[in-house]
Image 1 (tube, helix red, strand yellow):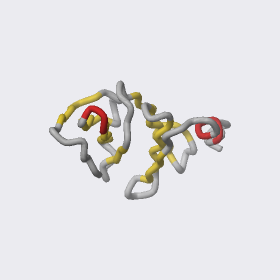
Image 2 (cartoon, helix red, strand yellow):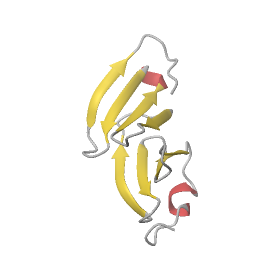
Image 3 (tube, one colour):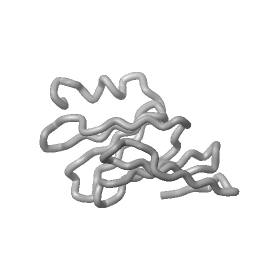
Amino acid sequence: EYRGEKMTDYIDVIPNQACQFTSDFNFLAFRSGGKKITLFDMYSKGIVKEYESGEMMNDFTISPQRDYIATAIYAECMTEIMSVSSGEKVAEFKTDSNFISF
Protein backbone atom coordinates (compact mmCIF):
# COMPACT_ATOMS: atom_id res chain seq x y z
CA GLU A 1 0.00 0.00 0.00
CA TYR A 2 1.12 3.55 -0.71
CA ARG A 3 -0.41 6.04 1.75
CA GLY A 4 -3.67 4.15 1.81
CA GLU A 5 -3.82 3.59 -1.93
CA LYS A 6 -3.49 -0.02 -2.99
CA MET A 7 -1.57 -0.94 -6.11
CA THR A 8 -4.66 -2.91 -7.12
CA ASP A 9 -6.46 0.42 -7.52
CA TYR A 10 -4.18 0.92 -10.50
CA ILE A 11 -3.85 -2.57 -11.94
CA ASP A 12 -7.08 -4.53 -11.45
CA VAL A 13 -8.72 -3.60 -14.74
CA ILE A 14 -6.08 -1.51 -16.51
CA PRO A 15 -4.50 -2.99 -19.66
CA ASN A 16 -1.04 -2.15 -21.03
CA GLN A 17 0.75 -2.08 -17.68
CA ALA A 18 4.49 -1.92 -17.14
CA CYS A 19 6.77 -0.91 -14.29
CA GLN A 20 10.42 -0.10 -13.84
CA PHE A 21 12.59 0.67 -10.82
CA THR A 22 15.05 3.53 -10.94
CA SER A 23 18.71 2.47 -10.96
CA ASP A 24 19.01 3.10 -7.19
CA PHE A 25 15.74 1.19 -6.47
CA ASN A 26 14.37 4.19 -4.55
CA PHE A 27 11.51 4.82 -6.98
CA LEU A 28 9.12 2.75 -9.05
CA ALA A 29 7.73 4.13 -12.29
CA PHE A 30 4.45 2.43 -13.19
CA ARG A 31 2.65 2.79 -16.55
CA SER A 32 -1.06 2.10 -16.58
CA GLY A 33 -3.56 2.28 -19.39
CA GLY A 34 -0.93 3.21 -21.92
CA LYS A 35 -1.09 6.98 -21.33
CA LYS A 36 -0.23 7.46 -17.65
CA ILE A 37 3.01 7.01 -15.68
CA THR A 38 2.95 7.21 -11.89
CA LEU A 39 6.20 7.63 -9.94
CA PHE A 40 6.19 6.06 -6.46
CA ASP A 41 8.75 6.79 -3.73
CA MET A 42 9.62 3.42 -2.18
CA TYR A 43 10.70 4.95 1.17
CA SER A 44 7.91 7.41 1.88
CA LYS A 45 5.47 5.02 0.16
CA GLY A 46 3.81 7.89 -1.64
CA ILE A 47 3.12 9.09 -5.13
CA VAL A 48 5.73 11.62 -6.22
CA LYS A 49 4.35 12.57 -9.65
CA GLU A 50 1.89 11.47 -12.27
CA TYR A 51 2.49 12.07 -15.97
CA GLU A 52 0.03 11.87 -18.81
CA SER A 53 0.97 11.40 -22.46
CA GLY A 54 -1.21 12.63 -25.29
CA GLU A 55 -0.55 9.39 -27.18
CA MET A 56 -0.62 5.68 -26.32
CA MET A 57 2.83 4.73 -24.94
CA ASN A 58 4.27 1.35 -25.82
CA ASP A 59 7.42 1.61 -23.71
CA PHE A 60 9.16 3.99 -21.32
CA THR A 61 12.36 4.42 -19.36
CA ILE A 62 13.51 6.75 -16.61
CA SER A 63 16.99 8.30 -16.55
CA PRO A 64 19.44 7.12 -13.85
CA GLN A 65 19.34 10.58 -12.23
CA ARG A 66 15.50 10.51 -12.20
CA ASP A 67 15.34 13.83 -14.04
CA TYR A 68 13.72 12.64 -17.30
CA ILE A 69 11.29 10.00 -18.52
CA ALA A 70 11.43 8.90 -22.16
CA THR A 71 8.41 7.28 -23.77
CA ALA A 72 8.17 5.29 -27.00
CA ILE A 73 5.01 5.70 -29.06
CA TYR A 74 5.18 3.10 -31.82
CA ALA A 75 2.09 4.16 -33.79
CA GLU A 76 3.48 7.68 -34.23
CA CYS A 77 7.16 6.59 -34.57
CA MET A 78 7.82 9.06 -31.77
CA THR A 79 9.71 9.45 -28.50
CA GLU A 80 8.63 12.01 -25.90
CA ILE A 81 10.99 13.27 -23.18
CA MET A 82 9.30 14.52 -20.00
CA SER A 83 10.86 16.38 -17.07
CA VAL A 84 10.31 14.58 -13.77
CA SER A 85 10.39 17.82 -11.74
CA SER A 86 7.84 19.75 -13.82
CA GLY A 87 5.92 16.90 -15.43
CA GLU A 88 6.07 18.79 -18.73
CA LYS A 89 7.16 17.45 -22.11
CA VAL A 90 10.57 18.97 -22.93
CA ALA A 91 11.29 17.27 -26.27
CA GLU A 92 9.74 15.12 -28.95
CA PHE A 93 11.52 13.07 -31.60
CA LYS A 94 9.98 11.45 -34.68
CA THR A 95 11.60 8.73 -36.77
CA ASP A 96 10.96 7.12 -40.13
CA SER A 97 10.69 3.67 -38.56
CA ASN A 98 8.40 2.30 -35.88
CA PHE A 99 11.30 0.43 -34.25
CA ILE A 100 12.05 2.28 -31.01
CA SER A 101 13.71 0.38 -28.20
CA PHE A 102 15.04 1.40 -24.79
